[in-house]
Length: 159
Image 1 (cartoon, rainbow, N blue to C red):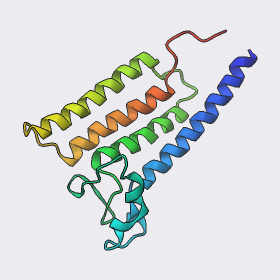
Image 2: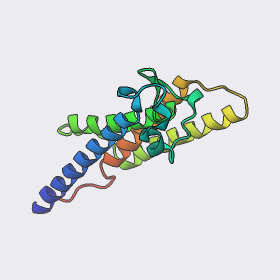
Image 3: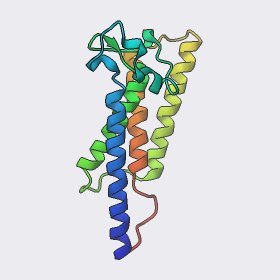
Image 4: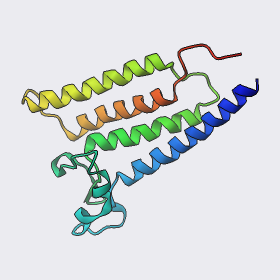
């Protein structure tokens, strides 16, 4: 009985860290539109910070308050939905509605494949994706990633 409470306490601390960190990343991904002048925006640290994970193509990025976001439309969907998943977990923690890891992993692979397929058919000029199609696929992937991280184990808990 003592192990379950210790495991639960560690789990709740980890979820809090993930909730806080993912929320911070999602807010920072909005870019310098909160406070920057349009002329100075490309030189802000937001772009340098996210440049190693996102191409930040201006033609594939939304504007926030008149300034290009720190990430592209797909990445803003991933970051915001990733944070949303941890918020949903925090809100629904008392209810036993969270899926098992195998189901969450299946949906994570599905959305990863859909994102890859979207990139491929756009590169082959079969389909031209839009800001919103990239955003929706990013939301699906980000949400499934956070659900997978916080999902229940596939095996039964120790009693």
